[in-house]
Amino acid sequence: MTNDTTPFVIGIDLGGTAIKLGRFEADGTCKESWSVDTPKPATPEAVLQVIVEAIAQVDPDNQCRAIGVGTPGPVDATGKIAKVAINLDGWQDVPLGSWLSQKTGKPVILANDANCAGLGEAWLGSGRHFRNLILLTLGTGVGGAIILDGKLFTGHTGAAGELGLITINLYGPDCNSGNKGSLEQYASVQAIQRATRTTPEEIGHAARSGNRQALEFWEGYGHHLGAGLASLMYVLTPEAIIIGGGISASAEFFIPAAIAEIERRVLPVCRPNLQVLVAELGNKAGMVGAAKLAWQTIEDSL
Image 1 (cartoon, one colour):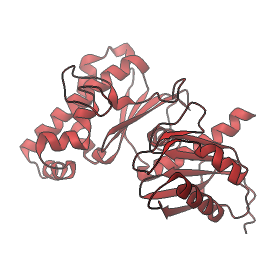
Image 2: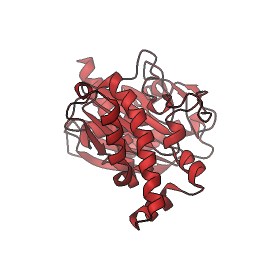
Image 3: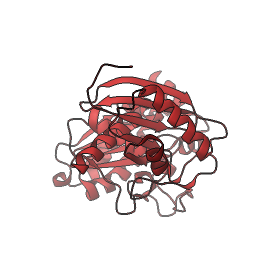
Image 4: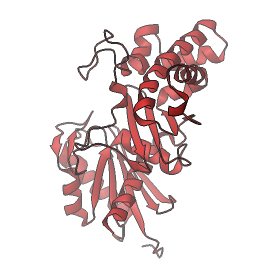
């Protein structure tokens, strides 16, 4: 039992290996967090049961105002249905939001995990001083999020913000999306391994040791990334670009080249005072963003 009556929401990050939950007040204070293993197999029914049990641990008195959930895949425009969930078994058009509402009696909103990470960084991370920004997560794939006037933008179908799938080479490598030469094919872990036969961590370590080839690789990587970001600048003119994901550990070696490429390709009027920053929240970003999504849902209903 708790005597704290401060209003709070629950933010949930649903991942392939772990489900992270946090109890967040309106100013972003996380009063309690919890992590449980994702069930194996991670069927919708099994995941629902684990989440409901974990919510009971985080909120034993059933006092939360709303629940936000980040899922590893696209969500429908209503924020209720997980269209697909990567690395989870049997997920196709799963009404997770409706199910959780029925089980908890609370409003529930879903969003893609990269979108939640962007919202988290905009709320409490590197993007907290900006109202308009984009996030790129550089990892196994290249995810993205768009924050416009402080709100997550997902388009009329809920699928907007796939920033890693824009084309930067008409005849480049095939992409799982069906595209060719997407930014993801030049900026993801797989792209780095294909180009170098090694891992981003190893190349980062070599660069820190002053290895010339590693430094030259990251410079070229930065130019490709910057070319993709240039296209996004012309469409969205964000105040800031936040770079997250595992590859961002080597950001010091490629961000200068990315900025130089942006400056070469983008008119100054479209990039006044642009900031390119490294994400701050790490693997907490999705949970934080899910909580912010829940708070915004409450605000929008007033």
